Length: 103
Length: 473
Image (tube, rainbow over all chains, first blue to last red; front, top):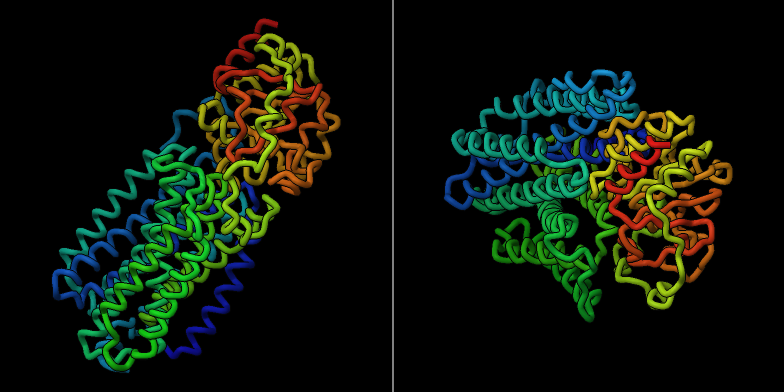
């Protein structure tokens, strides 16, 4: 992919990001922040791509930590967002017996 | 492009198509986040996109060292899963800071790794790789260390007060300039084996900068910092995408960069301060003067029984919860009190300041946890016009966001900050442990108003006591 194509993608993605995210109400900003936080964990793919070339110990350590960090970011981010949103989701129902059905 | 470099990038159209599916799911997932009923599904959709992106990347030929990959993924998944199950909702800002930090750290390490790989294969690094690598290195490193400091401040491992020393701005300025100069030198020598020693020096300089950048900022402003660093990490992921020719990284990183920027702007608007002022003014250091004198003024102190009578015979009651309520784990007790009041025919609502809690929307999460109905949560702009018709406003664990000085005193450090106008209500009950000033270190005129009663107690105990008294009535 040439640089100009990449820059085009970058600029368009920035506008899409602004558009989509400005529609999220303040009420949901904490989960939103947590969810977007999880999404930038995608940088972990970079770790997967570079570790294949790691020969020396240092390269292996750097690559492994990068993957470890990225995975914490992804897994933790999505799971904690899910937990938060689960609390909103069970809201509309009458509060008679909704304690037991958390799956 | 040289062969090894080309091998790094996903070459086949199929792989790129999978990346496109993945980032489309991210966008769709965030789009679903606009309403509480669909947001959870949206999160799962985005997570599915991530699973696709990781799976397709693992299928590439260039991926090797499987043992190490397994260690990283399994270890990371266990740590992430356990932490996200154990964390309390009050600690959410710290958790986000920590996750954000590791993301930034990953970006910086990948940049270093890519740099070493390029050196190993000859040292002629194209400028369109070198520049994003440097960007990712510096911004990722600032984000990692800055987020860790933000975490430590919010978790109270270190003092939430601003930590400053003489000439700090100048020192940071010089350090920033030195890091930038190092990057320029490295970029200038991109085609003839740039110095790895200098590269590591830039990494260390950026790490130092991340620490020094966040240390002088008060704990009250940490959410803004986290949001900004979230945007930084997103951009450093996007930069890594440029360096590795990976479209998924570019799109996802940029999306997060935008969202972090919007949230940062939303927060600084809610505090009526420019981002520059938040980051460089060292707010939270305490008022310049007057606080000691102010504390001599008389207040009206009441007990749970009096408070119960005021509340039970009111027509409308508005609770103004703050972070203090969350710290005391009083959400459920407050909800119980609201239930008792509703039995007496009182209309109950909750007034949520945009920065109530430690993040925008944090208080909504905390109250949702306590099963408060979504319709009773009122945003500031919605509740303020109703305040003059409100019989009793109950301030629980909130302070600065109710301070009328923000409107009346142009010299106050929080002058101009939008507030919940509880002083407009007929009566105000403030539940607070003592008269100590709040997180921002500013005395609150509200406490000394003639229609304000102070109930000195722990928020949870106060709510439970009042609820018990209301039950007796």
